[in-house]
Length: 182
Length: 296
Image (cartoon, rainbow over all chains, first blue to last red; front, top):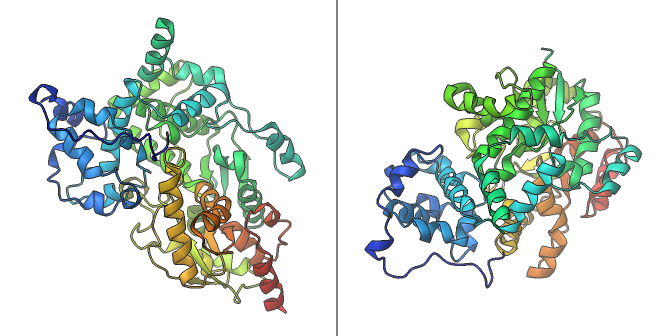
């Protein structure tokens, strides 16, 4: 997924009453990280201070928050721009309403992921963590080279223990269900 | 707990791509009397998976903390992302009993329990708080007074302030102070605290490279001889991509990107070979010549 041709901008078509989920904002306000979403009065500090917004034609944290407040659940969760946030937390630290904007974005990403909307790079990292404990597959060459570099051996992960701890995680269960259906 | 003995939490990016950081950090810490114990069976801190599942991030981070608690040692990380995540999750789980019980329910399956008895510090925090500026200064044998450099803290060592609370995210001072302890001058420049863009790589290279380009432009504007980082991701972003950015945007930088322990190591009299300068993509030989000639 790159931003050039494939990025879906949040749909800017006129809003139909039928696509509004009036309870979405309350649902968000009960989730860890987006508790304070109702406080947003659209001042725009998040967007004006956002490094990504400076170079992206589509990513605007203020717009995302507003869409969520309006209850445009599907529009916001299906939007690729949600995945452009660099998680620098500048918006969180500077929000005059103390909203933890980056965490609201994270909550929305989690909800999108539950529906199956996840960029491939994240899927690869999850697979790698489950397999080795590390988010990236560390090349054998690197592991062997450590000795000649005077570095201690790389600690081995414990995939069995990791899998046990992650039992019952909603996201992983959804993936399993989907692969069973296929 | 002995204040200068830590479990070292390597994380993923460093063994994957940034061994120069690990090599130089271990050398410098050993000389400053910080003892490192290898952390067995750790896993990814959880941060890269937070966008997909907050629950998974909490469990992975808590698993690491529980492992450290079994060892009875505090954690040192070289990666600000790992430090930030472990600090944040430690704080959240200590304060929120219901969430702690939920996460411990998961850990119990693997015979682990989070209790909240260890702390996590990034390398820079250990240097300033536990080793101390005086000890660092007295270890400097070859002051780098001939060098003018710029610093890049990166976001996760500073933000979100509520969870990290270690320096001022708008006007951070610690890295500057540590750089000046080597004898080098640390220059101010435009947008010093701006994000490197690394987390956007893979989703939009275009946005990420433009952010890195901005940074290199601002560093060049003040004629800095090097950019000093303390994060493996920021380092990859600048060191690995500098040549690419030069070609892509028709720029010329030639600014070496050094890990802070490489700079400190030089000042402590270690050789560039010992500090893995040969692993850097942007050639630092001009800077090293200046250091050698300046010392004469």
